[in-house]
Amino acid sequence: MDVVTAVVKYNQQTLGRDKLCRIIQYGSRLSSYLLAQAGASADFVSRAKSLDKHASTSRKIFRLGKSLDMIVGAIRARDIRHDSILKILIICRRLTYTIYYVIDHITWAARLGLYKSNPKEWSQFQAKFWLTALVLGLLRNLHDVLNLVFVPAKKNDGEEGSAPGNSVASRLMSRPEVLLDVVKNSADFLLPFNVMGLIELNVGVAGLLGLISSVAGAVPIWHPNLKLKPS
Image (tube, rainbow, N blue to C red; front, side):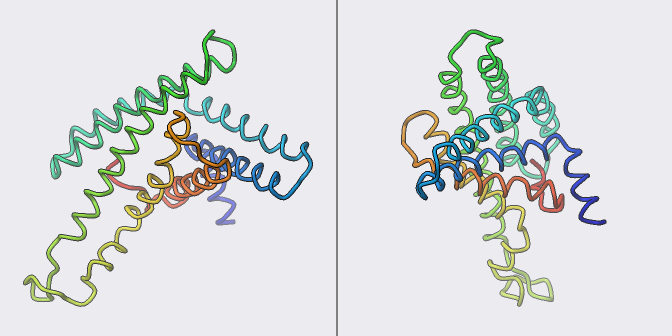
């Protein structure tokens, strides 16, 4: 019953359903590539591509109003007192995502024909803010890692030194949420370049990278103790 309870709790969260749809989206993209490479029928490949497209649209519905959440989060981040660099990075990232989600709402409306525009052009414009947010996220990751690496190791008597269990590796492993966020942001990093047309990723590679980042993003929702804080 514990597993069932955890699944129900996960599905009750809008963010949890969004991450599940993202896993389906990029998993379908990877599957369509693997099916095509394996010589599967065009019908199977087409179904996988269709699932990819519909999962993407479903995610946009789940994210309606998300821009407001980002604004509220940016305001709350002003209360961070212990680390000014961290505060600036979090505020800038959330404000960037505010614009990203506003454009996401416009793209969704354009896809449904509620707003006459080219959704592809909006997606390419949106990708610029996605990339900016990822850069800010990676800078935050670097900041966290450097704080862990260069914090003075302590002996048992409180003096600086190389006490057992106080190695750089052990300090990094003591913050698995930081490493998980590094994986998520790193896996996503090339995807906005692909959307903007600056590089051309293989469909399978794009699907794999997106799937890795999606799973890494879903884990903290399943295990809240792995959520990066503050964020």
